[in-house]
Length: 416
View 1 (cartoon, rainbow, N blue to C red):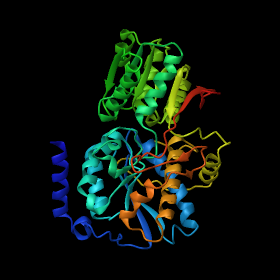
View 2 (view 1 turned 30 degrees about the horizontal axis):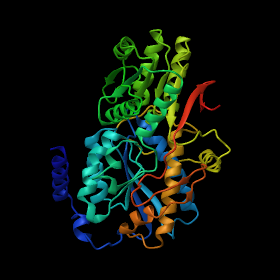
View 3 (view 1 turned 45 degrees about the horizontal axis):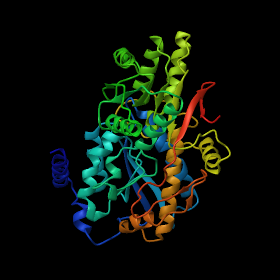
């Protein structure tokens, strides 16, 4: 029923638009987009609201790399530009923005979307515009829907899945002797995907989630999470794996520690744990307490402190001289950009991989050439010690996860 609604909305907006559908004009022709001077990428993400840090940092990392590409003449003489709209991490705005990007802006590719609930609602649009070869490249989500039929053929993932992240966390805790694992999740498709990942990993050991609690999407750090703490504590959980964003997950950690619950608490990459850690440190300065003890996180990129990796050195050098202007969102935002972050490093890597794909496509930017070019890429060294590998049945370039812990108020690899 929801899919039908999204497709109907697309059709209605097409009838309102001043231009006819690009898909209708060029269906099956393989024609190029209108401009041969620029490569237009379309992005819908949160530039304001409680998860603005995710959209801002991902955009900063990508733009920083594309800016250097453009300074050096672009790709086959064409410069890469991003058309970006704020969706505030709300699905209805992501759908509206996507229709505008495809119909009015006539972007070559959708790039750098942020979030499971938003991308999940956009997936039916990709199927509706199938004849136009509209793909979504490197979304900032590890959810399952775009990795399985019928939508896997329209999405090119780079990051590892939430299933891999949650499995890594479960295996780590089990190796430390914990058996009672609790779960905190956002009450939407994102939280559900994490819960399924944790359950699947535990089932391999004939275990189940000890207790679970949820919270509404987009609540701030000031929210009261004591009830969620109480539920999980009374369930007998020895550790908690959180599937959320940085403000509510930070609030949960704050309230757990305030209530004397000092168990290990873990978060996945989408929580923007470096931003979450900043919130906890700042709050600790006010209260005189330490909220950073016994925190674990999983990441899909290596540490931005690991200078042994060529991509990290390249990223840091460019970020230090970068002056990317962040577009204004629908609302004012209080978030201030960090010098380095996991999200901006991921955006940087995404941009680097896409640039390589565009180089391999050759001077003709036919949309129909994109997916075959990606699927033939099985050997690209992006500079993080493992190659990016796609294939006809593999639309995910990287599979590695990295486990981190807090030491001296910063995230470091658990192995350290």
